[in-house]
Structure formats: structure tokens, C-alpha cells
Length: 541
Image (cartoon, rainbow, N blue to C red; front, side, top):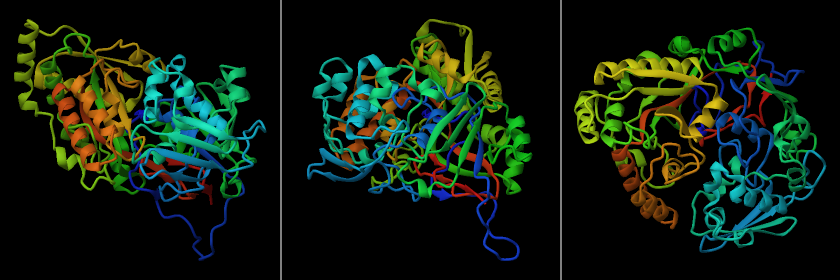
């Protein structure tokens, strides 16, 4: 995201392979002289919406995550090659026990928060236990359930001191896991596991809501947050790797109109932007925009606690009635891949086989939709469907997709569906309250493993707004998390996905691509394999 969380506000997505990517081939003058960095090192971006939260404990979406990665830093920061590297983040070194259960991190010395306080191992212990504290009600608490007694503490069945994370001194953090977790180091780069300053947090519960009270430890510091208008970051002079940070400032506007964004990009008011939907293919064909695969899934989710979507055949019918190829060819036009399952292709680089190829497709075709609908209606004892409403977050792209799918449901199912939209922050609150029948969502990988998609749907999962749960599914997720044996993990997750796709609390629609435009003089933007983007090494030529 989240949502997809770990999610983005439109059908832009994030490229899957690491790249210091550029649209166009800038660099170097026509005379052969090496281009020089520009005097003004300011990168101008568009967040489209207000970030819902810049507190690592409560952030769940990619708008917030993009900013958090620049102002905060965890034990690990993926390097410019998208790799976990010792010393690339707050941790200078670490050791792992032979059984894979105990991690001992050694932190760099001399690191400072932006208020001058030292960054210590105690900040990580405090931050992680704060995420797990039931009173925090963190949607992403489950990202720490790999730690011994973490889930039990979150459930009120253990004490904070029982949790397997402890600062043994200012610069040593010991972490005890429940089971070997092959991607745990990568997970420590994720924003939920970033540190917070205990003194600051305890002195002001709203510390993360304004620039004036925000304290961070990353390459940039938050210097301005004009809500619903602009976020400004400036280079952090106390950052340990400040010599590698070339930008003096990053600005994020909040223009949630794709045509306005495009005009501003053309007028050099933005350095990176997403093309408007109607121009996407044309700009890609002309080489002015770029589209690359991403580990992400754009889906519609059903509220299984509200009729008629409390019936799986109704859900299957609505999923089957979507003509994904037509949608991609005629509406999104960004090279997306039709999705007939949950986990995207290439999500399992360390497992010896591609998860998607192993499990195949599940969603039925539009020709099957009416029969599924009739079966569902019979089970519910209905002759016709009650009123159905599709909710999406405000954006021109989501609107066009919703209108196209509304027409497909009319054509392939014979049903009328009302469309309704809400602004992003309001929208997330509505989803969390379960106040919808069908809603749009997308999910980007938090790390490179199928589990980042699979464990989203455990019963009562923090980000699972569908109301769906299944004991067998939960047990398979637990089985996969209980071992470092990749075959056992793969088999359990394959079975889990089959259950999910039979029950179909979501209708997968497409696997994301990121479609973006970038000025030729913007260099050094790193787009990681896990779907995140880094500006810490970016600069303007």
C-alpha cells in the first residue's frame, strides 16, 4: 500500500526491477562535455492527495510511504541496486544465529534525530512495541508478528516485556523470531519498522501531524506541511550519509487531477508525473512516458458481510463479468497485465519457481458470469439483486475504470451498479468502517515474497476490509510462516491462494505497471524491486 496500500492513487505503479530510470536519455551535452549538477537542487513531485499519516506506526498507504522513506530510515535501507547491504541503513552490521531465529543488529554510532537527540537501539525497541501495542491499533501490526510473542502481545495475551525485541545497550538490538523468516532483513526497510523518538512521541501524541513537531532521522527532514496542498522536505544536515544526498529540497504538491498534473509537468512545474489516462498509450508510443511491470495488484473487493456479496457465487459472477483485456486495451492502456489471481508474476525470486506459474489462473470468463449469478441468487432465495454500489477513491483514472466495469456488469450480468467516490483519507476511513458493498483497492509488495499478498487476507487482518476469513486459509498462512523451508512455504501459500480465489472476496483486475514521465535532467531516481522509489540519490542536472 499497502494500501496498496502500499498502493498509489491512480493506475501509476512502480517498476519491478531496480533502475536508475529515466524517460529519455539525458546526460551529457551536445558538445561532449560532461553535464554538471544544476545550481538549484529541487525535485518537484505530485503526491496527488494528502498523506493520511506520516507516523510509521499508523501509515498504511504508498502516498505516506513515499514520503516516510525520505524522512525516516530503518535498520536497512535498500541500496541503489535494490539489495540489502550492511551499513546502508541505521544498522552498521548484524549477525544471524545458525537456526535463523536470533538477529543481533549493531547500530551506527553518532546518528542524530532532527531535534539533536541520538538515534539508539532503544528507539527501535520502543517503536516496534508501540506498533504492537493494542492501544495503537496499527493496521500493519502483523508485519511484526514474526517476532516472538509479538502477536500474543498485540492480542493482549502477553506483556510488552515478553516480545522478542530488546535493546541491550544504546547500539545493540536483539530480535528473536518465532520461525526463520527468509525476508526479515528486507522487511526491516519497510516503514512500519522504522524507529520513532520515544521522548517526542510521548510528549505529544500528535507529533507526526505537523511539520513543526515532526522529528525524523532520514536523508531529508519535513520542513513544511500545508495540509491538502503541499509537503516540503529539505536535506537533513545531520544525516549520516549526507554527502551522498544531492537534492536540497523535495516538494510534493497534491493535485488530484491528472490533466492539471500533465499541464504542470509540461510547464516544468513537476519533474516526474503520470500521464493522463487518455494520453497514456500515445505518450508511451512516443517515448515520452514509460511503463514497466510492478509487484502490485489492482482489485475490487467485496464486503462479504453485506448482501448480496455474502454469497461466493455472486462474488464469482461479478469477478467473471469483467473483461480485463478490453479494460487494459481500451481504458488503462499502460501495458498492465490482466489479473486472474492474487499474487503477481515474479513475486518469488528466492523460491526456485515462479508462484504465479505454479498456481495458474482462477477467475472465470465473462461467458460464465450469468450462470454464477443465477446460482448465487438461488442460494440467497432472491430473484433479482438488491441495489449495488461501487465505491472508489477520487481520481479520473479510477473513475474511468469504474465506468468501464459498470458497463461490463450491465452487459455480462444484466445488473445496474451505482458509482460513488470519496477523497482518499475519507475513503480509507469508510473502508475501515466496512461501510461499502464493492470498493476499489490495490496492493503493492512490501517485500519480495508472495507472503506480502497472502497474509493480507488472514481473518481480521489489519488491512483486510472485506470481512472475509477462513480458518484453513489462516492455518496455511501460519504454516508458511513457521518455517524457512521454501518448498513448504510455497506449497502452503499455493493452497491458500486457491482457497482465496474460490471464495473470491476480491476480484483481481490487473497487475500494475508504473506509467510515468520524468524530465531528462532528473538523474539518480531509484525504483526498487519491491515497488518503492528512492530520491535520496536523485539530483538535477
